[in-house]
Structures are given as structure tokens and as C-alpha cells.
Amino acid sequence: MSLGTTRPSRYPTRTVGEAVSTPRRDPVVHGDDRSGPLSPEQLEAYEARGFHQVDRLLGVDELLALEDAVRRLLDDRSLDADERVVREHAGRDVRSLFEVHRLDPAFAALAADPRLVEPARQILGSEVYVHQSRVNLKPGFRGRGFYWHSDFETWHAEDGMPAMRALSISLSLTPNEPWNGSLMVIPGSHRRFIGCQGETPEAHYQTSLRSQEYGVPSEADLSRLVAEGGIHMVTGGAGSAVMFDCNLMHGSGSNISPLARRNLFIVYNSVENRLVEPFAAPAPRPGFIAARP
Ligand code: 6CS
Ligand code: FE
Image (cartoon, rainbow, N blue to C red):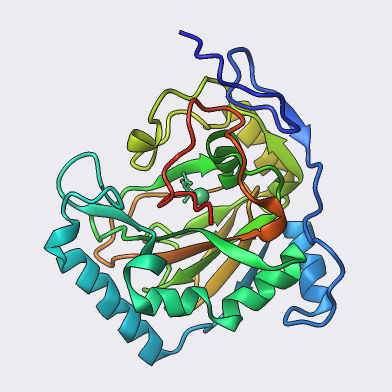
């Protein structure tokens, strides 16, 4: 049944008929702030590839404090029925903890830390705010993956994010190895918007955070992107980080190794790109997934 929830958009998606792809209509690096922290060469590489990796952004003491914070949240029985705790389809394993920057002061401090905020401001060319934060837990043996997607496709369709002027910073809380479900990105894929077929159902977030069925690119589109850009595996020690454009195509496999893979994601959006009504969904998603400060 058609809910007729699609509004005209510069980036059409969630269509009834076959999906279309659109060239990117927004800059990747906004403005011209050469004052750092990223060097002109690093900015140029970010613009071309859509991501920037940083080794040892966090120190050992910080990692231990964040580990404690994750443990506190997992042990907090008052969160048992909280929507911010997303469990895997089968079993009781926690898949993601959302809005961690409002649940624990350790994450709040990190979300406001200049090591994260300054590069975000430089790339987005304005002040920024936290659009979303979450920890993905991916435990050993059973942690399930995330299929290929562009975050912006979801944020545009379901949250009403108007332009590609946001980025994610993913911080490794454990080592990210090639074999424990690390992030995979398609370099250069941020330069095209890959529309997805299928209208967004009501309350889609209640299932999409476990496994996504709408907002899934076609195999033909993915094959084309990979033929052009290949696949880059984002690995690194605990404390390493990657900053990536909101429209970069990415995903991750399951973790059947014994070693948990935990990452903290903080998404920064430009204050000049605040959310409006969703472009292709019946209703906006709740604030713990998409902040509207
Ligand atoms: O739905 C979302 O907003 C989220 N989903 C995925 C798979 N990645 C980005 C974002 O955290
Ligand atoms: Fe994502």
C-alpha cells in the first residue's frame, strides 16, 4: 500500500518504482578553513576518498574509562526496556546503545572533545552538533553485521536531513581486525547518491536498527561502486578512529571470532543543516536516533 509519504527532494529515494541515482549536489569539504587540525593534503584526500583515519586518537586511560561506561550501561537494569538499548533479533545480546552522549558523562565529554569537534567543524565549515551517537557491541562469536548502506540515505529519507553536510567519527574501543567485523568502506562512493527502491513503512526504526530492509542499495549499484572504488577495510588498534562522509557507502560483516569488536560512533551535523520533515517516511524518528536541538 502506498502511504504517499515521499516529498520532492534533491536526492530521491524510497521510490515505488526502480531506484535512481543522483550525482552529489553538495560539497564534501564545506568552506575553506585551512587552519587545521587537518592539513590541506588530508582535506584533499578526505574529499577524494570520503574518509580519514587517525591512529591512537584515544589513550589507554581513556579507553579504560569508556569501557567502564559501557559496562555501567549494560548493567543498568533501569535501561532494560529502554528503546535506546537495541538487541539482536535472536537472543538477548545488545547490538547497539543509542544516545550514549546523554546517558553517561564519559561519552558526553568525548562528544565535546576538540579532537573530534575541531575536524568536524573544519570539514563541515560551521559549528556542529551531535545528530546521533551510539556504541555498536558486536560480541565475539555472535555479533551480527550491518549491510551496505549510506547513512545519509536514511537520514535524508527518515529524519529530514536536507544536505550532505554531516559526518561520522567511529572510535575503536577494541582492536578492529580484518576478522572481527570491522567497517568496510567503498572509497569515492560518497560522490553519488544511490537511491533505494521501496517505500518506508511506519515505525521502520523498530526493525531497521536490527536489520535493514528499506534503504538498501541494489546489487547492480553496489557492484558498480566497487568496480570503481574497490573496498577498503578500516582496521586499527583500540583508540584509533575514522571520520567518514555521511554519504560514503559502508557496511560490516558478522563477528565469528572470539574477540569482541566495539566501536563508538558520534555523528556531527552542521548547524546550517538542521533536520526538517522526513523526505520519504511517514513520520520523523525519535530524538534518540536523530536529535533536533
Ligand atoms: O539508521 C541509522 O540512523 C543508523 N543506521 C545505520 C546502519 N548506520 C548509521 C546510523 O547509525
Ligand atoms: Fe552506517
